[in-house]
Image (cartoon, rainbow, N blue to C red; front, side, top):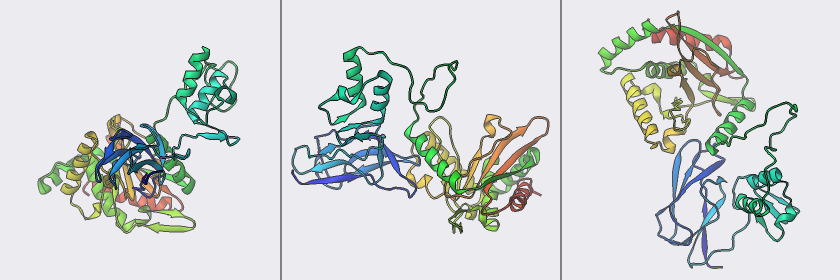
Length: 370
């Protein structure tokens, strides 16, 4: 085997476990130069690129769309134009399994095999069975699908048939992070009603002094960042009998406008003016729409604000992000009241309802310019 250098999936963020192969910029077998972009990867947090650390001939172990583990080998750069001997474990997190040490079947292939009643013996002589192999076997035998078989649980015989909806890798990552958060926290929620007209009047006053027309959400981020210095237990997380408080106040704001859920982060928000906060939110939002957010724009959040008032929602329960102890939800104006609700979901292991109520009441006062 010629001298080869492995391309490893880097850990761009401490919470990353997997990444998705978004684009292969170099075809397998092509010559690549050191410093050239070879692979584009995506985690829930960001899209990033891997550059070649050596010059040589490039060979993949994976394909576009694969979900790969952080730290796994996904490609090789070889000094000679010859495919290296590749281990069967490519680090692909597809749920594949090896049976009796002989047949390695991907999760999607196993699912299709079950739907069509295929067995391992139908793929005698193969080492690894992929989805394409099963499709070919189905076509060869002219088999008909038996319908969805992969959903667990007891179903009544009169229950209608099921359609299986594929979950994107980014959504799977989000699920894992939120599941880990729910394992760590004891969630509780407190809310207050805030007079929208008084907030609007306060914004008009601020715009005259600061020279910026801030949105309600931007003013909330500004004021929350100040309050977190006083109520710092909402700016940390609980783990193994320890209350950890972050030294920085980095406020993330959730965005989901057709390009997936992202949480851009405003670093050191407590040290910024209303104008700075407003400009930063607008800049990050624009980059979200252009799909230009980098990992650094999404990492390091210590507290989150999620504003779904534009959807007309007047009440909901925000879910705390992993490695955080609180999240603030912002609702639309409730019909007939002239008020909107702010909801603080927090980890009861870090604080209590009285502290949450105090923080929300101070936030209400600040927003209304009292």
